[in-house]
Length: 200
Image (cartoon, rainbow, N blue to C red; front, side):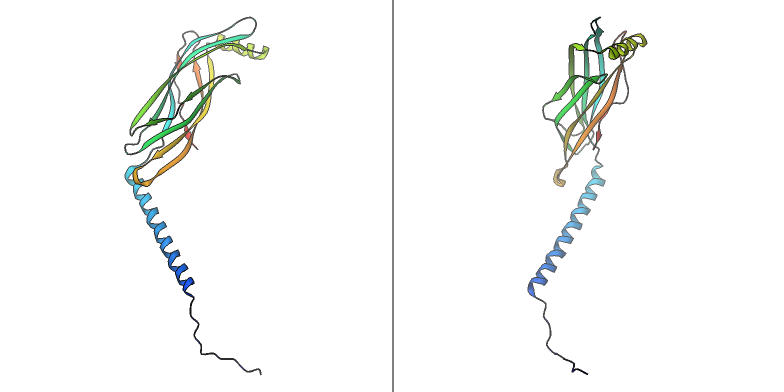
């Protein structure tokens, strides 16, 4: 049998390994403390995601001629709301597209703006679109909408929101809106229905 080698020399752990172990421990403790702090802050503040909504509208004019050209005038009241009592919200890159039968009629935009804690900001948009060409199929759909006294537009778009909560930093997300705006052609009244953004 081959002889067994026996060594009494004690192996020592390299100082760099000890340093790495201590560093990893400190980082783990810091992450745990930060997580607990964020969780406590969430429980205390009860954050609500800011929203952008259509709260009112009116169809001022909607008519087409025999050549198939459509003229549309309407007003839309949009509200950006921040229900948080302890959080400030900043909106940017706000862009909403209004369309009818797949045709883009207008783009509703807004410069970057802030909404203070537990507050809201409103924007009154006036849309004036004339000479919108329609194909025969679209003309038939317009005639049907006029006969039924129900005109529907589609509103799609998004806005970027930065939500700041004191020492806990900020959270960024995108609020998307997708809804239909319905009107009675006879008097221009808006059929109120839910039309608010959702966070992505």
